[in-house]
Image (cartoon, rainbow, N blue to C red; front, side, top):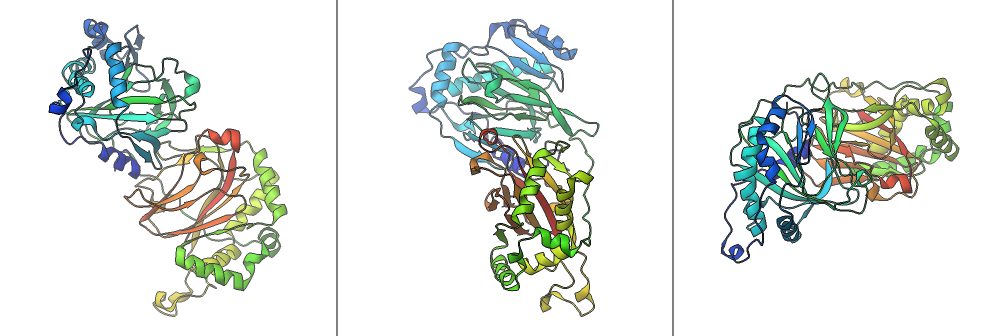
Length: 503
């Protein structure tokens, strides 16, 4: 089982595997030369034995040149790495590189192609320096043997961009590094920090323990390991976070075997009173003719949006109650999701408990069958081609599972290859509350993709009192897009009740 379970992360990493070692500049590139040498900070070179000892003793230390953090895993920052004149030429050169937008469940930013085949003079000198001068120093400090294989990329993070929790593990990667090319006045309010996660007894990431802020001409590096979980925090200002980053390579280390993800079993439908059921649902969706039209549409598209699904008074009561709740359970781990959920309800949560039971009810299972054509209830008609015999045609073992969730800045779910709940045919139902002045740039959408592909199949935006129904097969996966900081000014937290039904 892979430690980095996110499918999109694996695709992201595979795109970045270097195809060759870096090349010498071609004839055209030689015509333009660097106006200054690519030299390393002399303090680093002169004090390398001192820094080696710090690493060996797993100490924390900082001086004008180097800062070493031992927790949650060893990380080093080298300040004023390069000559300032060379750095300015390098910044000017990379500003001309073509960048590609990267946007899926795990990240949003812009990135260059792999730079080993880009023969520009400043980049060439940098790559030569990284391999011939910096690599031996890092190898000596860390005690890790490195080869000449280098992967190098240019990344640009603007307001709202981020890279969520991952560990960088991929065959051959030993040291990850980032050279920051940011404004001198970059501070905590600008975001974009390299955030380091602690891990639990099973090796899963827990919480951010350390944040290293971007600093111009600073190179941060750490050993890629089973516990090197980190992320790039969302950029919160209009400043641009530019960097050159990648990996030094060496002999692959064994991966950590982690316990399988526990699969939450669904539950059968329950009985609720007719009075409760009728007090919630908009009666238009109980009309046989309307249900027939919806089913016909759903069978063509596998998804549908049903506006004004709950009666207005009930919907407003639920909105008001959700805003007053404080006891939300944070769910993770962050390399899978960061959500706030509620499963248990107090006596004072009457309207929420009624809604939850409504979604679990025998009557709602039958209603969903009539709306979608899926056989979630014994009374639902069955396609003759689906029944093997008369006896089996009456057997229905439909299940469901769900929760009520709160969505605010920093919440998301990721696609995971060991999520057994996404390896089954299923009907997803999502109903949102307290959505105001919504814009798709805020995140929070439910996004469906094909397994091992990036193309979006279906995207469902949060919408007040609209029930989204989506049927997915075993080759379809879903995630909720990271909710970014613009929600605070424009919308505030919103909520949903999210259920999945299995035939």
